[in-house]
Length: 76
Image 1: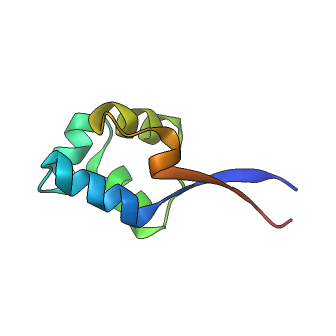
Image 2: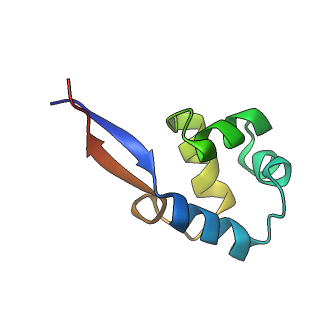
């Protein structure tokens, strides 16, 4: 079975609040991605890709991959 990465939405939102980001725009700037990418990943319309994951880990330091994301199996 193939795998993918899913955002841990509650943990991510908490980390964003604790880091002091007050908007998707501010978060997107810190992550160096488009605001629409942040909005779409947070809404579940888009799976997090490498740029989102890397940007999140930089912007939300000291959070680690396993704090913000999980690897899940995708049914075929």
